Image 1: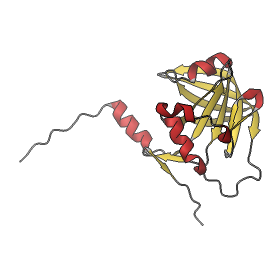
Image 2: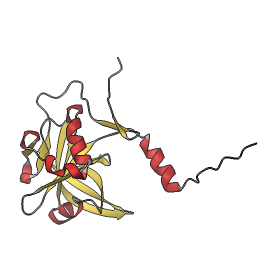
Image 3: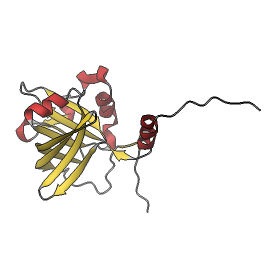
Image 4: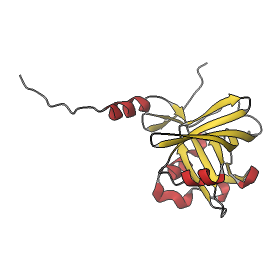
Length: 174
């Protein structure tokens, strides 16, 4: 009989593995600093919070470069990516591609000059109403100031879905 050494699992490792199998849509959270510079990161940690008042929430790691910008300006934008934005997702997922993130063909300026993603399934421009630190992240609760929807609305929206560390495609079942 041969004994096999097994690597002990930590709660953090097990939690990370459990979150990898939770499918989630991908948004780009964007902000504009006081000098007019654009900042952003890809997140799966954004969600609607309340209809009255219309509000969204996003969890941002306090080590992320966008964190101090949102903290200082009190504004952010959530851009729900569609499947055509796959190349842009790579730019926001890799710090060595930072200079390619905000090319003019992908971005417009929304309310307050915040960067809004052209062709997004939806865009929510928010003002921070509250923030709560937990662990390594801060959850920003934003009151929605503006919603931008595509014209016409997509009959079969195709959001980018993240599952098990890779991009997936969503398709309707007839």
